[in-house]
Image 1 (tube, rainbow, N blue to C red):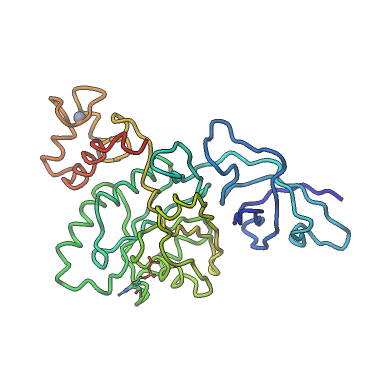
Image 2 (tube, rainbow, N blue to C red; image 1 turned 60 degrees about the vertical axis):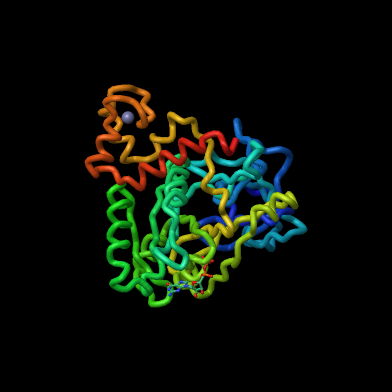
Length: 322
Ligand code: GDP
Ligand code: ZN
């Protein structure tokens, strides 16, 4: 008997997909039938983790549902539902090819540390811009707070001022002491969250603190290695026991790269977008134009100099990644 249903893609192994009818967590294998291409997408993967798909399955009488399917008799993915959002990584800096990392995300946790390693603000700003472009609400997770004694007070206050001033939420946590982990767990519950951060910030430790049964993949997959071998990184969704699902992104340096025209970049700095309503010229690059409300806001301290300087850096680099 052929049955039809809807499920979410939770893993892609290269040869097949694993689906689950979320919030239920019972995985079953599926394959693609023919060519499924979303219109206008240049992505190398037509189906990504997080996608909601239609499937058909051949179920015998003894089977209680598609969850009993095996690799010998997998379900067949017949359609991909439109994505509410998705995050892409470029295959290489020069090629136009891209890989969809995950879709239908409720938020992205950007894990950073004030020290060990010290967060690079232009890099964080690039991730935030990417989230804005792809319409995935970001939350900044400041980890290793157990390490930041009074000598970090000033730095910590500055960090809060810059990013809360720009409208972002910061959660202070420690994977080691458990500080803030309940708050993180509450946010994760009932939703799909992406975890991103450079190697060493404690992303794996945080995921394990959320749910000790999880075994996040460790280590950074070097971009050079990947590009050289033309291999693809497969991303995966995990269930958190206390509720919710997470997608881990090991070695995700290309995540911060988006194709933006010069005049578009400021649209994705929310505080600059807001201030730019007062600019005399439109479009305004907020660099040399007279009567620029963004430059005024930087001078008055309404927009942080650090964010503005990241913006200028992105303007400078515009075109570099195409
Ligand atoms: P990842 O590369 O981001 O996945 O980082 P890991 O989870 O592997 O952690 C990198 C290092 O930071 C390890 O030595 C961890 O023990 C340490 N670490 C992770 N979280 C914390 C924390 O909250 N406090 C402290 N002091 N160290 C941490
Ligand atoms: Zn301006």
